[in-house]
Amino acid sequence: MERAKEANRNEFGRKKRKSDNGEAMKMRNEKRKEKEDKNISGNLRFYVSSENDKVEIFDMIDTAKLLLSERVSLVSNAMILREVFQFYLSNNGGAPDQQNEGETESFKPYLRSPRDNCMEDICLISESSLKNLVAGISDHGLHCKEIVEIDSFDTFGHVQKLTLKCKDMHTIKIDTSSRLPGGKFLVNLRVLHGIYSSGLRYAQYERFAKYAGIGIIPESAFHEVQDMFCDVTDDAVKESVSDALDDEVGTTVLECDNVDDYKGITIVSDARHGWRKNSRFSDIISLGYRTNKVVGYAVVSHGDDPCSQRHELHGVKKTV
Image (tube, rainbow, N blue to C red; front, top):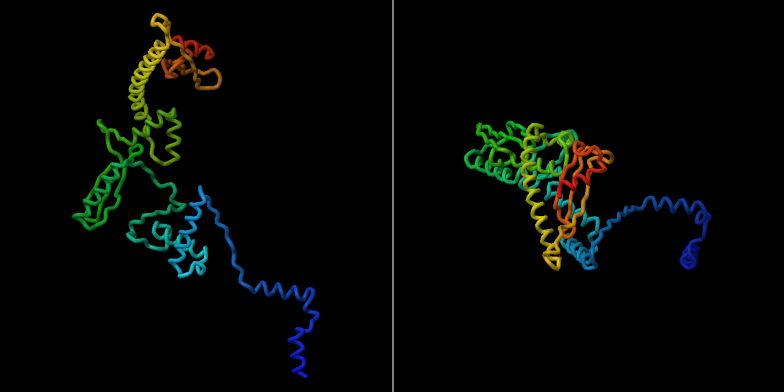
């Protein structure tokens, strides 16, 4: 009897039961799916300029996989990405819990800035001063095994005067900027050059430097250098305008059939006002019609003409 049932089951399959259909079957399928391990997928999209670049990247991925296993199919994309990122971070200071080669307790090639230390002092340093600092520390290491540390620093505008000392009281004093003839710091003058060229006033510069935390150049030094800067730029403007005027005259004469036909040059004027409405000062620029170079420049104020609408005409008369 049992043998007959076994043969019937093998030939026609198991007898259908009520639990094989309906809600009972759905519940069994859902429980089975919950027990199965699910792999969470992630999409990583990249863009390249050509098909060859894409193929090259895929070839590099397969080559890296072969370094981890004899068969590419045994290494997933997630595994190779993890290995590549860990290798890069460990060699560039990105892994906080690992000590990189050449890293010591006092030196780290990659520094993280904690949230509570975002307002630390900042200074600007020139390339030559940085090289000089490295050379000074190297020279100290030749005759002393102790480590030098920053003992004190004084701020002069955007420059700092550092004092380094070791436990044996050896001292290294160095500035973060080289000096120009006359003793002025190159870094401070370079910053002032950028401020003057951008048209910022001292109050605007002071607000910017204060909240950036890069030090502030005193107002007296700001205006002292500004006077020197204005004298130099004034001479440069006069020389440039003179050269442009010669070019414009020469170009105009060459276009004339006869030298006697030359009657003068043609200019195009433009006025720039400090405010949208009735401005106190206006910059009047005269451009050569043929060379499009500045051949005249004048500043007109309310003292010359109280109406800013007439400033351009007044300035043109000044330049001709």
